[in-house]
Length: 137
Image (tube, rainbow, N blue to C red; front, side, top):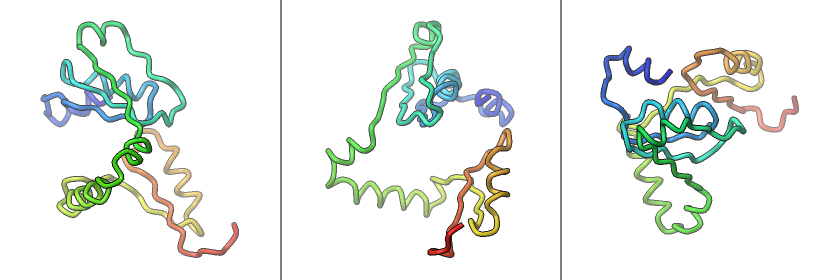
């Protein structure tokens, strides 16, 4: 669980914001480790399952859940998009925003990438590169 991972690293401060794109049990686990009264923003539901929170989470932890629709935000804030992307790029270049990923080549590493994606406890995203455009598999 997220809570155990933070404890193992001796990181006892609780997060003040949760961002979830998976939904279902993922959102519930994330809410469980948040600081009391802090928001959980759900911006996707890749699991296809809605999160179901225990009533105790709402009452005793003061859970606040909010949805966020990026497509709608981008339509309503077109002029702010270039500055937003520039800010994100600066954070990435400064190593303040990063993601663990493993890169595979589609033409000869697809099965390895698929096996990797099915591993339990995987702490990385899978990136499949296509360098041979025009070839049919």
